[in-house]
Amino acid sequence: MCGRYRLSRRKQILEEQFAALSDDSDWSPRYNIAPTQFVPVVRRNSKSGSREISLIRWGLVPSWAKDSSKAASMINARSETAATKPAFCDALKCRRCLIPADGFYEWQKVGKSKQAYCCEVNRGEVFSFAGLWETWHEPNGNALETCSILTTTPKSLTAPIHDRMPVILDPKCYDLWLDPGITDTIVVSGFLKPFDARLMRCFPVSSRVNQPANDDSECSAPVEITQTQGSLFSESV
Image (cartoon, rainbow, N blue to C red):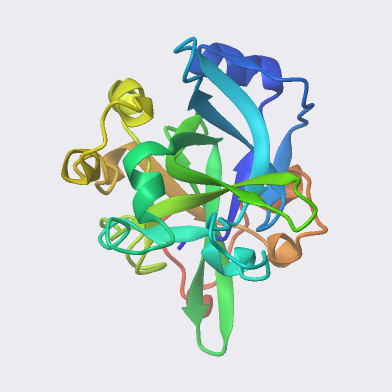
């Protein structure tokens, strides 16, 4: 799964990276993004066709849900079953988005405790998760936009840490992933593959990242761990 991630770039960098315009929402670098917080996503404007960046809440609430209480449990969608799950099937057809990041965290079980790891692409470059989004209307009529990150089976690098990993999209697929004209779930599911482990690295970080209130660069700073703690490799690039 993907339960925490990092996006340490400012809005201007994201605009350049994704060739997108931002709405009026402000964004500051974040190092420990947690479920139900508002996060930047990239979507295609249905009228102009241009890419736009806006803030929506992480934790998908289906349009038909009676309330938003289960949003925290809908932060991820399994890519293998999203096309058949009522909560995700419509979004997979026509409400796909890019969710920018420059790192994500996973926890490896070590005895009775867990060791946190930060995973990066090419030593910390910006990448994009494959995301789905929905609009849910609150009882008072206000619209709440929410999103979920698609996950897949991991490759060699992250497999020892966790049995799932977020789908990281190839930039060459961005336009097709965002294209609302592509509604065949078989076609879009073809983009949901494990990312090349040779282009990634993972390294242990401190337990500081365990608390969502901690949100600074120390959350993703590498630390040394002993062999008795279940030491892994540090990178694969």
